[in-house]
Image 1: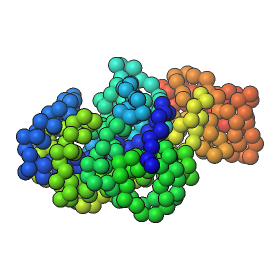
Image 2: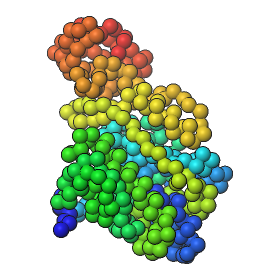
Image 3: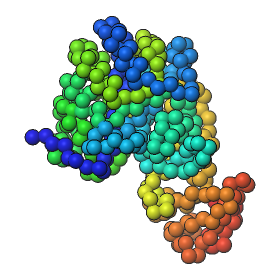
Image 4: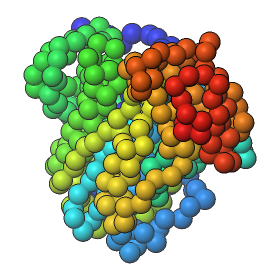
Length: 382
């Protein structure tokens, strides 16, 4: 018997199912134009950025998919976007790329005129989808044209609405009293929910979960593009209008359905990789400057943009933490202007060790230089 365990500690999940309105809107419209338009109007929320020109000109575009940790297990608060995926859709190359961003990735975010460094999943809680879009855009140096959010209460329903999904698990595990065995299986909504949510029993942790989440996206997309998806469009629209929000207008959706649909035939996945870090006692993922540039270059290419070297607060902090490696030294310091820096403990390049008791440094954001009163770190070479 399948049961869903009550818990306030929602392990966070990917619930962004792009194909619902982006890739099959035209099929729905052919059968029920009026119902589709009514649903689109209900889930639409205008944003400051008007990207409709991109769709009209049939240019590549990006959509930030946000899985919000509400709508299940009694969660009714605003929630955090504990699943974040950048989707780029290129109608010329007929390719869709999904890049997952770990929920604990360190990032700079700005809302209401205030700037702070926090885990990236806080951006939605701080300033909604608007802040989440800006945060991801600055982190990866790419434009984010649209967003799409889907709360956790909708995943099981939408999977059931399309008749279940087929996925492949690389391990056997039990989560919320549901056991998923290693191998290929056809899952119903509750099973798919557990498949996409489990994190702690995966040797790859959150990165393993991201791969399973992307499997669910692709599986749902394929079902929505099938005849079965069209036959159940009324169920799908009902789920969508109660669980999804986007700044894509109905006109935008029609344009996507008409000119971008072929991109769903070639879907590829990637992940922004990070390293374990502790900042003020809290666990983070630090994306190296090399990794940030790798993902930025990949996404910019999909958007027909030339590569640029990323220069932002994250790369600045990486430069200011040269001894952080995520293994022997997991202490990472957030620098403010003329702030005192604690490097924690670790090993210098000459083999000697250091600790906070013998190393004191200051860093000036304006000049990009620092001074050191402990051994091993040359002045101004953070």
